[in-house]
Structure formats: structure tokens, C-alpha cells
Image (cartoon, rainbow, N blue to C red):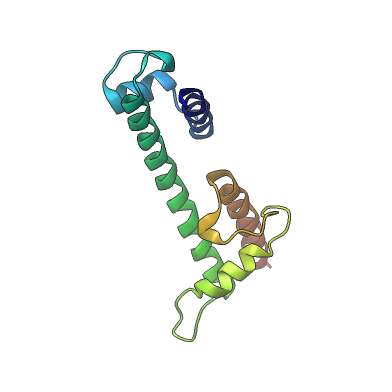
Length: 128
């Protein structure tokens, strides 16, 4: 079980482009970069810290996607973003979402890929 947590922590640190020693120090106040020396409880705290950091980053990108698609015209009658239409569009976006996930089910990397594609599409349409 600990090996799984080590792999997951290392993957999350790499995805977030953070330093492992800094993450461990912030999460559990221990000066080490060796995951093997941490207890199970400390590993859980590190994972929770990384998950919160990842969710915060993903939330900002999700809001940008919704905003850009609302500018593109995906709004309801009241002028607010139409989340149902946006989710349908995201599921059909193509190679950026090959598993056909909804907007809130995307991973951080998939969200970034979708944001890049949506940004290019909207910017191209606006600049016409």
C-alpha cells in the first residue's frame, strides 16, 4: 500500500511541478525528501495537501473554460453559461477528451488540454 502511495505522490508532485522536499515540509513539518521514512498518516497528509493544490489549479481552468464557451455563445435564455450544453460540447471535443468525460470529471492535464483547445477556438472566432 505504501508503494502505491509513493507512486501517487511522486506523480502528483511531477504534475504540479513542485519540489517533493518542500511539499513534505509544508504538509507534515518534516525535513526530508524520502517518502520511505514517513508514516502512513504522514503520507495521507501529503496526499491530501497535493490533492487540494491540484483541485485549486483545476478549478481555475474549469472556470476559464466555462467563461470562454459562454463568450462563444453557449448561454441560456437569461445569459448565464449553459452548463448542460458546455458539458455536451466538452464530451465531443475530440482528441483532447478521448474518454468522453464531462467537464468536472476531467483530470488536471485533460482540463489543461481542453482549455488550450477552447482558447484557440474562441480567440480565432473573436479575431475574425
